[in-house]
Image (tube, rainbow, N blue to C red; front, side, top):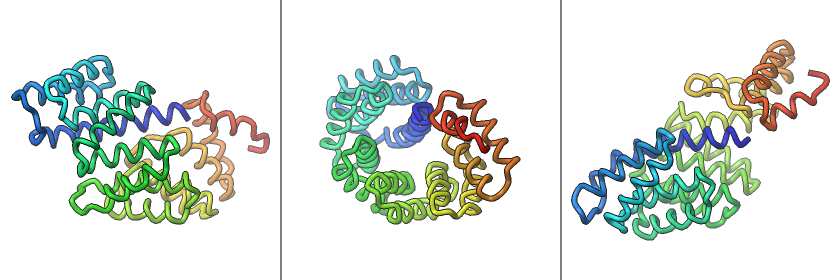
Length: 252
């Protein structure tokens, strides 16, 4: 699952890049364009996974203006990728304190808190971000809210959030993969297969999608296709938990 987590973070970094570059013109810098330039460079390096260069530029952006919420938001995301959780949480919280109505900051901090078990603190932020009609990426916050509900054991509510996300963006890969999982768990194997096909139209397999695909095809009686998914899982993600689980299944 660690490989999947890195993949998800990389995808989020690209989304963050687009969102922040679009909003940089409105950042509240005190020292001219210097802070904006370092912010944009930092986010670009972050999206390229050049983390040290990203950190240097984001720190320079904050040095230029310690009140730049977007620089703190991006730096928090970088520290999250580096597994420096104390630093990540500190900068996310600083970003929220500076810009309490910023939808991107609400979404990022809410997701971060939910992923680390602080569900009661994270969920209200995700509800704020997902319910605001001014948010032009509501599907991201809705999907994160759904994942938070999964962690709370509220699968029905989670499914509602994922479906709302797909109503707004029917090609949003994270929501499609979550619906694949829920459909499989509900025993609705044809729906699980359908969600996977939609997912593969916009994103590549993960160890989890392959595991679910193999189990789904086996449940549908398509043993040969199930074995093909098993082989692909073992080839592409040999160190994943899903590969270990499927290798232990003797009747596959």
